[in-house]
Length: 196
Image 1 (cartoon, rainbow, N blue to C red):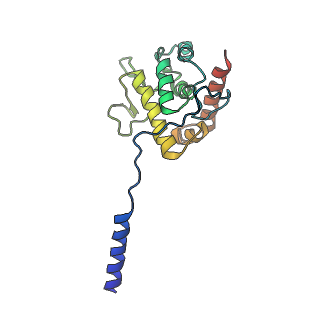
Image 2 (cartoon, rainbow, N blue to C red):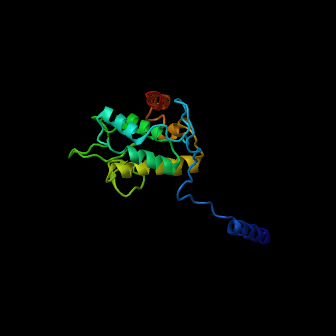
Image 3 (cartoon, rainbow, N blue to C red):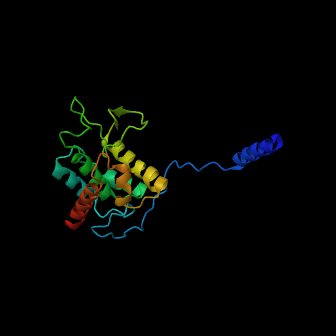
């Protein structure tokens, strides 16, 4: 009996010893469609390339009176680098905080400054936080981290490809209306892409 136990222990250790470690993903490789690819107004595929320009994104932000006006280029560059559509990213920002203008937004601090957190991304071990959310030094830093989060945790980590894949995890039903969130992002993206 002792020999059988010893063999089982040896096999277990041998199996553990030779089992390869899981791959760690530092940065997700972007899933980019070919340059100049066209996506329909209602296409919520994350990899859809930008359909709008930085100036158009800034115009959208200005329409909301957003403190993030002037970041259109950061949305475009971050999206291109991560392989994520910037109109979708901006729609998350608008839905989460009315583009940083909602009076009850969790990103507002008592001194009138903000966390620059475009997606109400929870702290989850981040170096600087305000309450339960990440706190960034600038809008550009908040935008870059949102893209990194979606690319690493959702695209590479979970295999998500669309807004409908991401939202149930990103904004779970215990604190959000998942179908309402998806519908809001879809309506914004379609409106922006359809407006000349």
